[in-house]
Image (cartoon, rainbow over all chains, first blue to last red; front, side, top):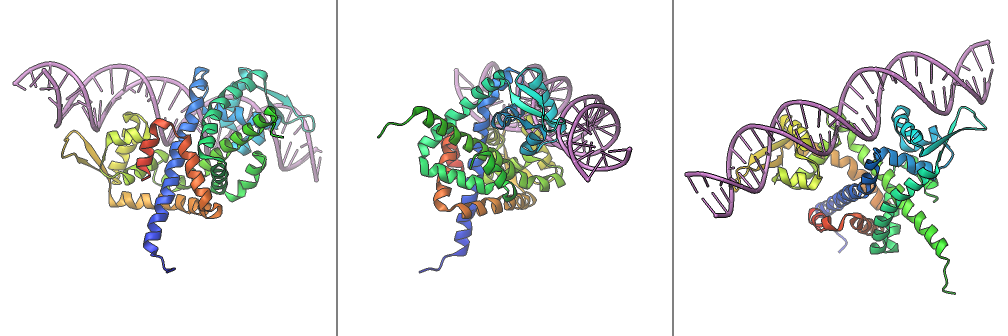
Length: 162
Length: 162
DNA sequence: CATATATGTCAACAACTCTGACATATATAG
DNA sequence: CTATATATGTCAGAGTTGTTGACATATATG
C-alpha cells in the first residue's frame, strides 16, 4: 500500500519543522548565554565576542573582511572594534600591499580572553556532541549548512575549513 | 597501534567545536532573517514574532507561561504584547479558574499572520531537511536538544511534543 | 590627475532588553 | 474576615546593538 494520506503527511511535516524551529531557538539562546556573564564583567557584549571570535579565526583580516562576515555596517562595527582596540584586545596594522587597509589581530590579552570565552561554549558543545554521538554530529552540521543561504554556503565552508 | 597523539586529538576536537559554533551562528542568522521583512512592514520586530509563535503553540497560556518560555521580564513582554493586543492579533481572556490570569489567544488575524511568518521559515527548514536526509535531521535534533540546559530540556520536550 | 576604495567619525534614531518602584485585582491561608 | 501572596500592569531610566545619512582622509588605480 504505497498510498499516503497527504493531510497526515502535511501535519507531520509541520510538526517536524516546528520542532526544528523551537530546538534552534532554545539551543541558540542557551548557547549564546554562556559567554555573556564574562563579557558583562568587562563592559562588553555579544557583539564584542563576535568580533574577537572572527579576528581570532582570521588573523590579519582587513576591516572589510569582518564587515562581510558579520554583515553589519562599519558604523556598528567601529564602536565595538574601537573599544576592543582601546582596551588592548585587538591590534591594527597598516596593510603592506595596500596601505589603506587596517589588518586586525588579537593581542595576547585578546587571544586569552577569546580562549576563555570559547572554553564556556566548548564545554557545552563537546558534551552535546558526546551525548548525541558522531553520526548525529554529522547530521547536525549538514542540516545547519543547508539552512544557510545557498549564496553564502561557500564562504561559510571556507570559514569552517570544509 | 592504538596510541593517539593527544595534541592532534585536541586540535581536531577544537576544530569540530568551532565548526558547530560557526554553523550555528550563520544558520541562526539566516533563519531568523526570513520573517523580519514581513514583520517590519507592520512595525513589528522579532520579539513580536516570538510572542505570536508561542501563543500559537500554547493557546490559552497565561502571561506567566509566556514569560517562562521566553525568559524575559514582564516589562519587556508587556510592550510587545500590548501592541499585538492593540492591533488585533492577540486576544486576552480572563481566566475562569483564576480570574487574575489573562489567558492569551491568537485572533484570526493573529493566526493568519503567524502562518505567513511560519511559511517563510518552513520553506527554508523543509529544504534543509530534504537536502540532508532523515538521519541527519534526527542528529540535528539530538545535538540541539543536548545543547539546551539540562534543567529545561524536559520543558522543551513537552513544548515540542517529544 | 581624476576617480574609486578602505577606513573613520559624528549624529540621530529604533528595537529590545534590563532594573527598580509602585499599583490593582484576586486568591489563599490562618 | 484579615493578612499575605500571586498575577498582571505601568512608569521611568538606562544599556547594547543595530540602522541611515553625511562627511572626511588616506591611498590605490586608471
